[in-house]
Length: 165
Image (cartoon, rainbow, N blue to C red; front, side):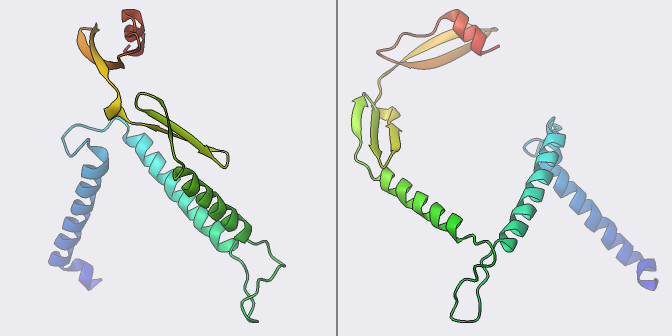
């Protein structure tokens, strides 16, 4: 109790708590380290709490589903369910995806390429190869500029107003 009565320890504790509160507020309560309050603070805190809970559940589930190795040469004890089948299927899927990404692509139209291998379709859009025309619309007193490929017609004013309500 004598340590808590020491005024220097109290000052240190007050400074530490103040630092923790201010650093938490700067990162979470305020927008982009400005004095403006984040209107989604409550939702963000709920999302962080849910994320932490999900990570904890996943860690526990991972620890429970680990394969049980016996002391006889590392063979798997088949009395408990094994997570290896899920691991193997994930590795197989990863290999298939990597293989599909190596697929030679055919040109579909200007700047658009596609290919397929093992039932996996791959699309690639190269925006630098597409010729655009820029259109300017005025919606709610603001100028909105959009780029439309040359071979396509621009959207109507009504469409733009519906999109930017």
